[in-house]
Length: 210
Ligand SMILES: N[C@@H](CCC(=O)N[C@@H](CS)C(=O)NCC(=O)O)C(=O)O
Image 1 (cartoon, rainbow, N blue to C red):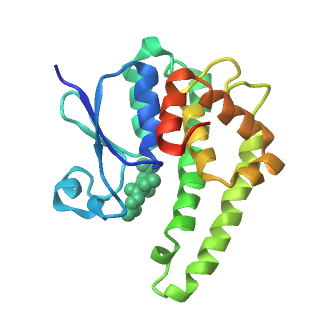
Image 2 (cartoon, rainbow, N blue to C red; image 1 turned 135 degrees about the vertical axis):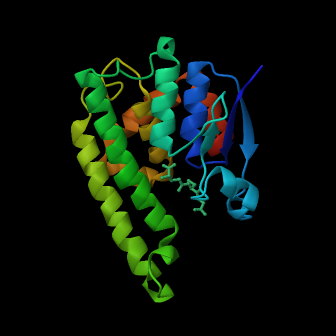
C-alpha cells in the first residue's frame, strides 16, 4: 500500500509535518536528509526540491509538496475527519491561514536569517549584524503573535489546528527564557500542543523530553 514519504531531519521544519501526519493518522516513511552533511544539496534531493531545503512530502500519487505551511494545509484538507483546520472557505479558515502564513514568512524566515546569516550578504563581515537584526525582527513578530492569542488552549480556542503545530515548532527554536518573559501565551499554547500524546512523542524524538 502506498505511503507518504517525508524528507526531513531532526529539529528542522519537517517536525511540524511529522506531527501533523501523526495527528492525521497517516502512514508515512521518514527519509533523513542530513543538512549538516549538506545532503540537501545532493542531485537526488535537488531533483525532489530544487530549493534544496527540507521538508518535502511525497503524496500517495507521487506529487511533491514543499513549504511547511503548504504541506500542513494539505494534510488538514486530505484528512478532514482529523479536524486539523477549520472548514475551507470559512472565516475561521481565513484567519487560520492568515496567521499560518504570517508565521512562515516572518518568524520561520527570520529564524533562517539568524541561522544562515552568512548567506544574506556577499560580505561575511556582515553576518553578525544580520543575525542580530534578524533576532530583533523575530522578537517583534512574536510580540504581534502574542497579542493574537486568546484564552486558549489553542489559537482558535478549543479547536486544535495545524497552526498550533506550527507555533509549537517555531517556539522550540526560540530562546525559552525570552518566551517566558515576553510571550507567556505563545509558551502556554506550545505546551498545550506538546502535551498531546502523539506530538509528545515527536517532541521527545526531536527536542528531547518535554
Ligand atoms: N520556506 C521553507 C523553509 C525550509 C527550510 O529552511 N528548511 C531548513 C531546515 S529548518 C533547511 O532545509 N536548511 C538547509 C539549508 O538551507 O541548507 C519551508 O517553510 O518549508
